[in-house]
Length: 387
Image 1: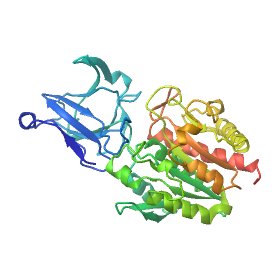
Image 2: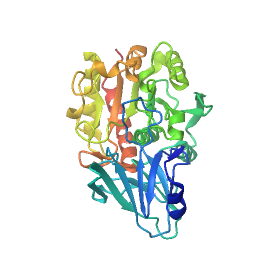
Image 3: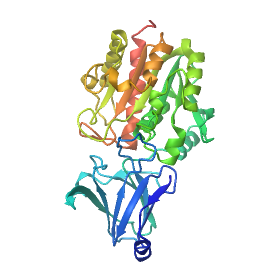
């Protein structure tokens, strides 16, 4: 949540009325300079492997209410397909500004992208981000509203934060649910929240870890392609991260009871395979058939606004889903397929950040997708037996 300033002292003094910072949970920005009512910024890649680029950013803008401020990104475009996300209540709720809010142009011979915004009347600040945020404060609000859910501590993070493990239901069969192996992938945790809510009335027990990279989530890291490897390449003999080590230990203890696992992710910023919701196909034919059967159930029972197509699921060997993608280390799904041989479904799910084949992805629709997934799992399990 630190901000890097590359400002001249004169610019700070003259334009003190327009202030940009990331000194809050989840904050991430590099402020390159301020010129009048225009701020030049970039994502902070402090945790990212050398030579890699990712697109997460999240900052606070303070300016006189009603005064237009232009935000400019140069070099690479980190603004998503529905424009930036904006919050005027301190990051509690978010909305998209829309694709039409973004202007592309050339500056000093380089591509640049900008949008114009302002602090609403009666407010002192707004938050602007690549996507809606989901932090520990959001989880605490959900837990307060659902007192039957139980929260435990999976472990302490590297920096001493408590890593939550949430249990819903008391059934013997267990559904293991994880998100935020890549801490920037916030929309996945809204899906997890919806799945938890729907599971309150199911016969299974959900064991969920919403923040698999707890420090990264709260500090505003990219998380994806973290150096030396990220959390979803850490399921090895000697994991680096306490969250992964603790989950592997817990998984071993629960092995015989686990009937399904879902590892929830968001993909890249735009383009093919980043514009839909899909399951990431396993290399084993039996596991792939299970995924296809669940996908068919999800397409059939879907009630929420995000449409799902079973034919969108990505078979192993296609597009990016290849062995070479996982050379840095074993993924959660690869570990789960080995650890839970009797599970009837083991899958990763990719959820588009902003737009899924024309359907808006936001907090509400992502939660609805999670509820749809829980209903689909109930339908799928009724028609299957343990292998």
